[in-house]
Amino acid sequence: MEPLKSCIMKQRHLVITEEKEYRSEEECKTNHKKSKGVFFAFVQIREHLRILGDHPSVSSGPPISLSWDVESNEMFSVDMYENFRDQYRRSKHEFLVPASIRTEWLLDAGYTMRTIHEASQAITDARRKRLAGTTKTQLRDKADDFAENLKKTVDWVIGKKDSVGNNSCDDSPEASKPTPPLRSSSTRDQPRISPTRKQLLRRRSSAFL
Image (spheres, rainbow, N blue to C red):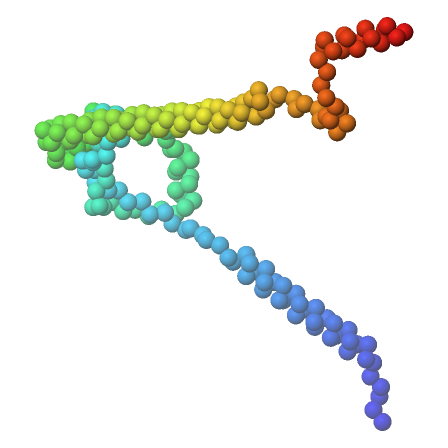
């Protein structure tokens, strides 16, 4: 005869096993959720050659642009880049390059003074045309707004006159004249008596009295 075994230990072992499996699934889900993301390890910095540009956004002088040719290519870690940027961060006005410095850069790049002057003149003409087009557009918009407001005002005045005319037709003398009261049939059938005959009847009646 085999000795009796306790079922309590089996149930406890089963519960512990299920709890471990549940924890392992939760840890896998948590690790899987944490692993979703984008991380950057390196920063690649490429320097391009400066060339003569054609955009009319400069206030004066020749515009500059970047060439497709790469002059240098360096790679840094993100931590090193962030530390260097925090120490040597430039302000907004330091990114503005004066016309004289741009001219020197273009001369060093091999451009002639005549080419730079012609490009500057073309940019000045393009900037004037853009300014004139912007001014014409603004004037056209103002004229369109004025015409639309004037049309609305005229339509409102015409509509008001029409409503006043309809009301005046309803208030005409013939329409506003009160209707005479209807006479009864007995009064309508009686003959009319002249004033002279009324006086004569009054005298006769007083004579009898």
